[in-house]
Each structure stands twice: as structure tokens, then as C-alpha cells.
Image 1 (cartoon, one colour):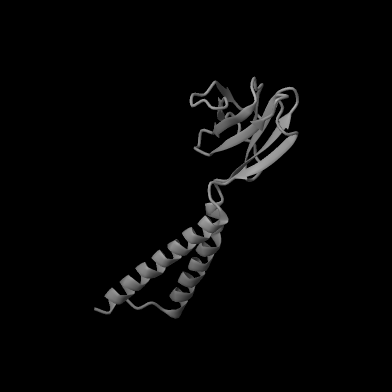
Image 2: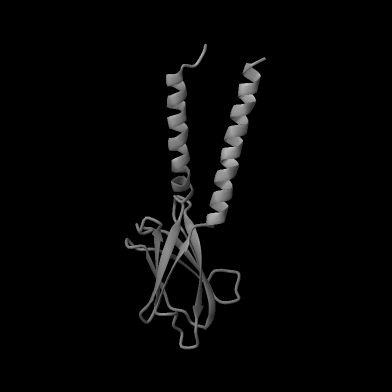
Length: 154
């Protein structure tokens, strides 16, 4: 069976659409957070889209400890609140039921307060990693296509 020009055009358009979707797919697991202080420390855990991580499990680790001291669940706004009892670097690990998660390193000073408002993104992958992954995927696709194209001539 010989492919027509029309079939090749459809295949080309499909490949272009797939390549345009790769960055979106790679960034789909991004998360971000905001930190507030108001007597207690509140962490708002969100997906990259801004939607809150509802009922996400949060483990709170005191400075210098490897066992968590508290296990909390985020509310309907994605907020987790706790009161630090000693200064240092507190670690908050947040994970929702679908596997999305983040690790937040929160520095608490001597007055038991975190900075007034911090925010950050925890994407899991840097831009360079995403570029390398996309290039490797493309290399694999091209290599596989060339392999099968070479076998058709035999």
C-alpha cells in the first residue's frame, strides 16, 4: 500500500500538533504555593492552574528532625495551617490523592514568624530539563521513523 500526499499531510499535521502539546503536557504536574502568617503559618497549596489542592495530605517536619510531627489535611481552599514552636527550617510535604505534590522549605525566625508572604512554584522540572526531555523525545521519534522507513525498502 502506497501512502498518498494527502495521507502524508495528515500525518505531518498530527505530528506538529503533538509537538506543540508536549510543553503543556510536561507542565501539567506543576504546583505552586503561597505562605501567609497570621499568628499561625498558613500554606496555600495549588496546582499550576491556580486551583487549590483540596484535601491534600501535608506532613510537617520540625527543624532537624526526620520524622514528621504533624499530619494535616488541606481545606477546600487548599490551605494548611500550623503553629511553629521553634525557629529553624521547617519542611512541609504536600501531596494530593492523584500524586501531585510539593516540598516547601520554610524558614521560621526567632519571633516564630515566617516571612509575611512568600510564593513559589514547584514544578519538579526546570526549563532546561523540559527542553532536554523534548529533544530526547523528538530524537527517539525521528530515529524510530527512520528505522521503520529503512526496513520498508527491503
